[in-house]
Length: 116
Image 1: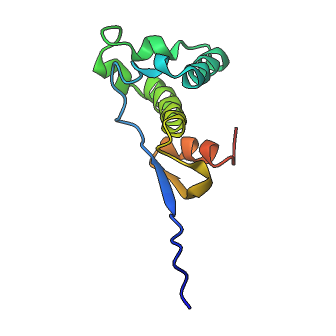
Image 2 (image 1 turned 90 degrees about the vertical axis):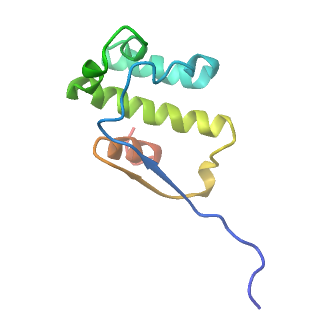
């Protein structure tokens, strides 16, 4: 007899370079856990990531520079996944697959617990 229970399989995809823009993390302050992640990443790297993402502080061109974009996109991917979990839009226990494009691969590996 076939099972009537459907198990939802979830894939999480992380974007890569070209997706950074000024103001992209402007609402993160309303999520203390996500804000703490952002601060920890800033402390580790020595780069004020929130300042890089503020509207008006840096141009879109600056946000697309590889050295800026790689850091910002990786952190933003992980912070976004955390916010989705906090909002109950993502149940990590149901995630079967993770993938990332370009620098998004690092966020995928970190989210999967393969690297920290």
